[in-house]
Image 1 (cartoon, helix red, strand yellow):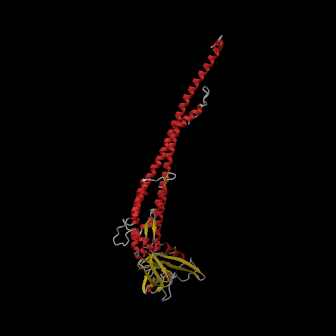
Image 2: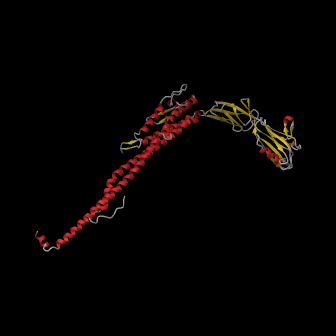
Image 3: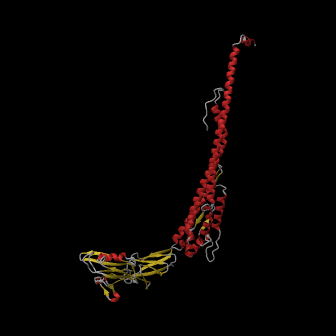
Amino acid sequence: MGTIISTGIGSGLDISGLVSQLVAAEGQPVASRLDRDEAGFQAELSALGSFRAALDTFRSSLSSLKELDTFLGRSVAQSNEDFVAALATTTAGPGTYAIEVEQLASAHRLVSTDFASATAVVGTGTLTVSLGSEGFALAIDATNNTLAGIRDAINDADTNPGVSATIVTGLTGSRLVLTSQTTGAANPITVTASGGDGGLTPLIYDPANSITNLTELDPAQNARILIDGLAAESETNTISEAIEGLDIDLLATNAVGETTIVSVGFDPAGAKQAVQQLVDSYNSLVDALAGLTAFDPETQVAGPLLGDSTVRGLTTQLRRELNNPLQLPGNPFGGLFAVGIATDVEGRLTLDETELDAALAQDFDSVGALFSTADVGIAVKLDSLLEPYLSLDGILDNRTDGLNASIEDITDRRETLNERLVRLETRLLREFNALDSLLAQFNSTSGFLSQQLNNLPGFDTLLNTR
């Protein structure tokens, strides 16, 4: 509003107060309507946010049900945890196996005889180090002919396939230790020398030619187990292909004839948890919508989304999908009703765990297919149904953008109203002040005339006789 000037000198009227009341009377109805409109938009915006949050939670519950792996989980039980650790993948079939660990895989490790120190000169020539079928040659000369120099040359070689060299120093001197970085019988270390001054001979390890000047600390050997008496080997201490879908980590060797019993079975607990999460999140969605679309006949107060076509359309589609039979050839379960899920009179889902347990026991994989089969599984169809509502620039985004635009428009309309009222106030003040000035002039003239008439001879006598 503009600045109000003190007025009313000529008329005696409170022109400032009068103008303020006229301006308020002009602006109040429009301002009240704008306030009501904005409150309605804000309530609808908040309700849509709650609606979207409930949909997001429900959709999250579908993510695991969409994946068949949720229903292909396997449980593993072992009679002993000291010798093997078995992990079943989704391709493992139920079964029980007796596993005996005969030996663990080890990496080849060799050690030299004692040298005076790490800086002791060993010799010159060409040192060839091999790991399995891969080898690399090192030129050993006066720049690197010490024990430490040879260690560094091995470790720094660009073509080194995986042999690490270290020096261990004790009371009797220093020794060079060579270790394969890869386990398994296919990865033995061999060392040969040629040329030079012959000082590299103590580092030769060439069993094929019966030269073993290095001492073997650990052999290059495969892991070996017996599965129900059938032998299986691996270069590492994990055996993955002996039993389909079962990874077996070897921890220690058994005594001869001692076994660990490993049992693989279905894992219904994970599947039941995913199904229960679906039921719970859908019911939370139903409860949230009940509050947003309710009508209280006593207070005549309606929820902000009562009668909303978007909400009504989506809930109708969700209920239809949840209750429709599914076309899954060869699947003994034709819909959610067949695995213990039903809809009550309030539209909420109920889960009969006994029926679900029976269905999982009857055909574990088919229960999974009921939810996760591409295009027709119930979780897949529900997720596809929610996509246009929750996607970026989808239905709810567009609704939200529209409401925000309406709220911004109300702000603009308020500014326009305020500008109009300022102009009205200015005009009224100008008009009332002009009237006040005119009245002041009239009063002044009237007073002057009265004074002059009173001064005329006989004017009072004339008034009295009249």
